[in-house]
Each structure stands twice: as C-alpha cells, then as structure tokens.
Amino acid sequence: MTDLLLCLNNQLLTKNLYGMLRDEGYSVETADHPSLAVQMVLREDYTAVVMDAEPFGLSVEAAIKIFKAVLPELLVIFIGYDKLDTDALSIEAPLDLAAFRQTIHELPRLRHLN
Image 1: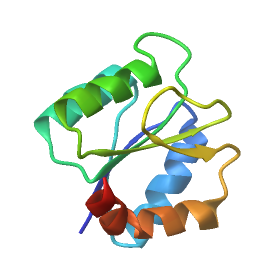
Image 2: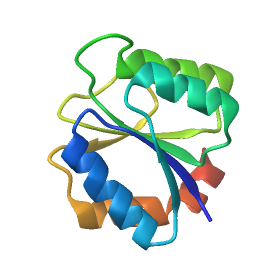
Image 3: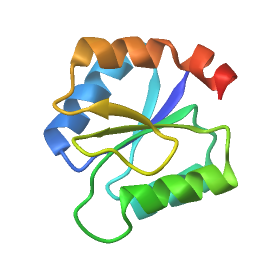
C-alpha cells in the first residue's frame, strides 16, 4: 500500500482526491498547511506529497525545497497554474482526475527514477 500526503488549499479537491485514492487502496493523510506537511514528512515515510498553492505562511515552493533537502528521494506532486522553481512534478490545474490517477499508479516507477 502506498502512503500519500495531500496538502491542498482547495478543500473540495482534497475531499475528491482523498476519496478516489482511498477507494483505489492507497493510504492517504492530509495536512492543512505546508508547514504542517513539512512536520508530517519529517515524522512519517511517504511515497509522495501532493500540494497546490497556498496564499499565506510557508509557501509551497519553500516547503518543497525543505522536503528535497531532507528527503531527496521523496516525490512531490504540485498541482497549480504556475511553474515552480523546484524539481517537483507539476500537474497543471484544473486537475484532470484520470491523468492524476495514472500519475499516482506510476509512483513506484517514478520513485525508482528519482
């Protein structure tokens, strides 16, 4: 079973992805803010973190840089309209659920390439 952490500003998207991923057999946790996601990643072993833009506090870009500095093998998936200056896998918003599902199914292969 794959452990995923969702840290999304859009609560409706969080609910939709959480339900879809749980139905497909993934173990999923959520964080309300990038700073909480950083704390959780430091305590738990996740295959990937899925994030979108957060308008205040610790930026998603800063959080991703922290993840990669501490755990370079961690896959980070960014959902958004902007391109980040990080090595996160970017998925353009609005999210295509079928394409996202395919990306999640490819996590073992992507992690191996990382």
